[in-house]
Length: 187
Image (cartoon, rainbow, N blue to C red):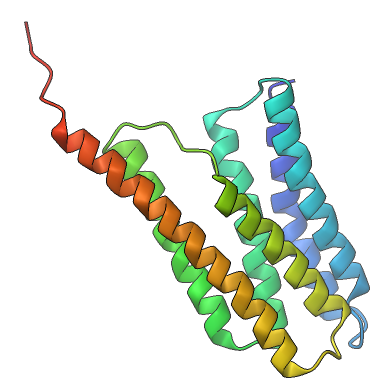
Protein backbone atom coordinates (compact mmCIF):
# COMPACT_ATOMS: atom_id res chain seq x y z
CA UNK A 1 0.00 0.00 0.00
CA UNK A 2 2.97 2.28 0.63
CA UNK A 3 3.66 2.69 -3.11
CA UNK A 4 0.08 3.52 -4.18
CA UNK A 5 0.32 7.28 -3.35
CA UNK A 6 3.58 7.45 -5.33
CA UNK A 7 1.98 5.67 -8.28
CA UNK A 8 -0.86 8.21 -8.21
CA UNK A 9 1.68 11.08 -8.15
CA UNK A 10 3.51 9.55 -11.13
CA UNK A 11 0.16 9.24 -12.92
CA UNK A 12 -0.41 12.96 -12.31
CA UNK A 13 3.03 13.77 -13.75
CA UNK A 14 2.22 11.64 -16.82
CA UNK A 15 -1.01 13.60 -17.29
CA UNK A 16 0.97 16.81 -17.94
CA UNK A 17 1.83 16.11 -21.60
CA UNK A 18 -1.67 14.72 -22.17
CA UNK A 19 -3.09 17.95 -20.79
CA UNK A 20 -0.86 20.12 -23.01
CA UNK A 21 -1.70 18.21 -26.21
CA UNK A 22 -5.41 18.22 -25.38
CA UNK A 23 -5.31 21.92 -24.58
CA UNK A 24 -3.94 22.91 -27.97
CA UNK A 25 -5.76 20.29 -30.07
CA UNK A 26 -9.23 20.89 -28.70
CA UNK A 27 -11.99 23.42 -29.28
CA UNK A 28 -10.84 27.02 -29.05
CA UNK A 29 -14.00 28.36 -27.37
CA UNK A 30 -14.13 26.08 -24.35
CA UNK A 31 -11.30 23.96 -23.05
CA UNK A 32 -13.56 21.36 -21.47
CA UNK A 33 -11.38 18.27 -22.03
CA UNK A 34 -8.21 19.89 -20.72
CA UNK A 35 -10.23 21.20 -17.76
CA UNK A 36 -11.41 17.64 -17.05
CA UNK A 37 -7.82 16.34 -17.25
CA UNK A 38 -6.77 19.14 -14.93
CA UNK A 39 -9.60 18.27 -12.52
CA UNK A 40 -8.53 14.60 -12.57
CA UNK A 41 -5.00 15.75 -11.70
CA UNK A 42 -6.40 17.86 -8.84
CA UNK A 43 -8.41 14.90 -7.56
CA UNK A 44 -5.35 12.65 -7.79
CA UNK A 45 -3.48 15.21 -5.67
CA UNK A 46 -6.14 14.93 -2.99
CA UNK A 47 -6.27 11.15 -3.30
CA UNK A 48 -2.55 10.47 -2.99
CA UNK A 49 -2.30 12.72 0.07
CA UNK A 50 -5.36 11.13 1.66
CA UNK A 51 -4.04 7.60 1.09
CA UNK A 52 -0.57 8.48 2.35
CA UNK A 53 -2.00 9.89 5.59
CA UNK A 54 -4.75 7.28 6.05
CA UNK A 55 -2.47 4.28 5.62
CA UNK A 56 0.68 5.85 7.01
CA UNK A 57 2.24 5.43 3.55
CA UNK A 58 4.12 8.71 3.49
CA UNK A 59 7.63 8.60 2.07
CA UNK A 60 10.38 11.05 1.18
CA UNK A 61 9.89 10.09 -2.48
CA UNK A 62 6.20 10.92 -2.16
CA UNK A 63 7.05 14.24 -0.53
CA UNK A 64 8.96 15.07 -3.71
CA UNK A 65 6.68 13.46 -6.34
CA UNK A 66 3.46 14.96 -4.96
CA UNK A 67 4.43 18.64 -5.16
CA UNK A 68 6.38 17.99 -8.38
CA UNK A 69 3.21 16.70 -10.02
CA UNK A 70 1.22 19.66 -8.69
CA UNK A 71 3.73 22.21 -9.88
CA UNK A 72 4.27 20.66 -13.30
CA UNK A 73 0.54 20.55 -13.95
CA UNK A 74 -0.13 24.03 -12.59
CA UNK A 75 2.75 25.68 -14.44
CA UNK A 76 1.83 23.83 -17.64
CA UNK A 77 -1.74 25.08 -17.35
CA UNK A 78 -0.58 28.62 -16.65
CA UNK A 79 1.75 28.56 -19.66
CA UNK A 80 -1.03 27.26 -21.92
CA UNK A 81 -3.47 29.87 -20.64
CA UNK A 82 -0.83 32.58 -21.10
CA UNK A 83 -0.10 31.46 -24.66
CA UNK A 84 -3.83 31.84 -25.32
CA UNK A 85 -3.56 35.46 -24.15
CA UNK A 86 -5.95 35.05 -21.22
CA UNK A 87 -3.51 36.00 -18.47
CA UNK A 88 -0.33 38.10 -18.56
CA UNK A 89 3.09 36.47 -18.66
CA UNK A 90 4.12 38.00 -15.32
CA UNK A 91 1.83 35.53 -13.53
CA UNK A 92 3.73 32.57 -14.98
CA UNK A 93 7.09 34.18 -14.28
CA UNK A 94 6.24 34.92 -10.63
CA UNK A 95 4.97 31.38 -10.08
CA UNK A 96 8.05 29.86 -11.75
CA UNK A 97 10.43 31.97 -9.64
CA UNK A 98 8.50 31.05 -6.51
CA UNK A 99 8.68 27.34 -7.34
CA UNK A 100 12.41 27.53 -8.10
CA UNK A 101 13.01 29.27 -4.76
CA UNK A 102 10.94 26.62 -2.99
CA UNK A 103 12.90 23.82 -4.66
CA UNK A 104 16.25 25.40 -3.76
CA UNK A 105 15.12 25.99 -0.17
CA UNK A 106 13.88 22.41 0.17
CA UNK A 107 17.12 21.05 -1.23
CA UNK A 108 19.21 23.16 1.13
CA UNK A 109 17.12 22.12 4.14
CA UNK A 110 17.42 18.48 3.18
CA UNK A 111 21.12 18.40 2.22
CA UNK A 112 22.67 21.10 4.40
CA UNK A 113 20.45 21.16 7.48
CA UNK A 114 19.82 17.39 7.26
CA UNK A 115 16.09 17.93 7.69
CA UNK A 116 13.60 15.49 6.18
CA UNK A 117 11.66 16.83 3.24
CA UNK A 118 9.00 18.99 4.87
CA UNK A 119 5.38 18.26 3.99
CA UNK A 120 3.25 21.05 2.58
CA UNK A 121 1.73 23.44 5.10
CA UNK A 122 -1.90 24.57 5.14
CA UNK A 123 -1.19 27.81 3.26
CA UNK A 124 0.73 25.91 0.57
CA UNK A 125 -2.10 23.40 0.20
CA UNK A 126 -4.66 26.21 0.05
CA UNK A 127 -2.60 27.97 -2.60
CA UNK A 128 -2.49 24.79 -4.68
CA UNK A 129 -6.26 24.33 -4.44
CA UNK A 130 -6.86 27.97 -5.40
CA UNK A 131 -4.56 27.61 -8.41
CA UNK A 132 -6.42 24.49 -9.51
CA UNK A 133 -9.78 26.30 -9.24
CA UNK A 134 -8.50 29.43 -11.00
CA UNK A 135 -6.94 27.42 -13.84
CA UNK A 136 -10.14 25.42 -14.42
CA UNK A 137 -12.19 28.63 -14.34
CA UNK A 138 -9.87 30.26 -16.86
CA UNK A 139 -10.19 27.25 -19.17
CA UNK A 140 -13.95 26.82 -18.91
CA UNK A 141 -15.05 30.47 -18.73
CA UNK A 142 -12.79 31.74 -21.48
CA UNK A 143 -15.11 34.63 -22.35
CA UNK A 144 -14.81 36.27 -18.94
CA UNK A 145 -13.68 39.89 -19.08
CA UNK A 146 -9.90 40.28 -19.09
CA UNK A 147 -9.92 42.27 -15.87
CA UNK A 148 -11.68 39.39 -14.08
CA UNK A 149 -9.06 36.92 -15.34
CA UNK A 150 -6.28 39.24 -14.15
CA UNK A 151 -7.94 39.70 -10.75
CA UNK A 152 -8.40 35.99 -10.07
CA UNK A 153 -4.90 35.06 -11.24
CA UNK A 154 -3.52 37.94 -9.16
CA UNK A 155 -5.32 36.57 -6.11
CA UNK A 156 -3.89 33.09 -6.74
CA UNK A 157 -0.37 34.50 -7.23
CA UNK A 158 -0.65 36.63 -4.07
CA UNK A 159 -1.70 33.54 -2.10
CA UNK A 160 1.25 31.60 -3.54
CA UNK A 161 3.59 34.39 -2.45
CA UNK A 162 2.09 34.25 1.06
CA UNK A 163 2.80 30.51 1.09
CA UNK A 164 6.36 31.26 -0.01
CA UNK A 165 6.71 33.72 2.88
CA UNK A 166 5.50 31.05 5.33
CA UNK A 167 7.98 28.53 3.95
CA UNK A 168 10.72 31.17 4.11
CA UNK A 169 9.94 31.74 7.77
CA UNK A 170 10.26 27.99 8.42
CA UNK A 171 13.49 27.88 6.43
CA UNK A 172 15.02 30.74 8.44
CA UNK A 173 13.94 29.15 11.74
CA UNK A 174 15.44 25.78 10.83
CA UNK A 175 18.69 27.33 9.62
CA UNK A 176 18.99 29.52 12.77
CA UNK A 177 18.37 26.50 15.00
CA UNK A 178 21.00 24.59 13.06
CA UNK A 179 23.55 27.36 13.63
CA UNK A 180 22.66 27.66 17.34
CA UNK A 181 23.36 24.00 18.11
CA UNK A 182 26.83 23.25 19.36
CA UNK A 183 28.83 20.80 17.26
CA UNK A 184 28.56 17.19 18.38
CA UNK A 185 31.42 16.02 20.53
CA UNK A 186 33.68 13.30 19.19
CA UNK A 187 34.12 11.40 22.45
